[in-house]
Image (cartoon, rainbow, N blue to C red):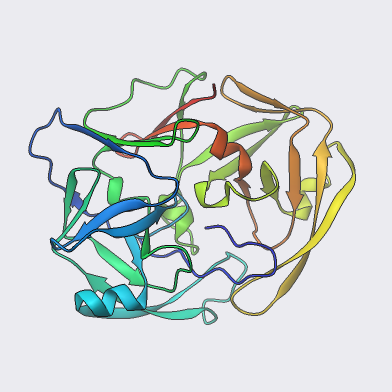
Length: 289
């Protein structure tokens, strides 16, 4: 769900839960993923896809790849890149359906996707496609693993409960994990958005939240633009304290302050973690080497 400063992002959408079809309930498959994952659609030659836990659809695919595969268009809608956008403002996109999508040796049946440009890959996998499996993203070791089963009950340390908001107008909030973090003793909710891991900040927060926190001097100033053409002045500051997530602690994390989004989201810190997501039980396992 990342929007880099000065560049209009074009992602994020509606909940379409694909059904996974493992041949063996104990099956486990894995693959390198940070430079792109090998994906086959309806038995196609391999395509290169990214992965974004802030992506609210099963998958996103470029217009070029969709045309090459002759994917059937089953509908259209407006895509929003921020919860600040009007419901009438955004990018018009085609919705496509496929019979099968294979990734890391695992086959998902009947997923639906959104046709959007992507400058790096043929497309991007969103979080809903992994609803019926355990998805592990090991960023330190560049390993994606798909397996069966469930995480143990939350213990407040490495296994945490997370929430979603099925009634949210901004679709990623309906399906992407939102976790509780502590910032210098202040508790707040933050979206787990691995699409923002390359941002030069550990956490993104709106200005209203920034006024409640002990923050240092401004370290950098930038501007973020949304798909509607609105520009938001943004800045980074150090938190004078710790960011705590379960038993993970970052001392004096760098915070990006911007009203581009109306909620907090985890950014660079997510790229330092090993994350297992159990969507059926709304649980996360988070570890940091």
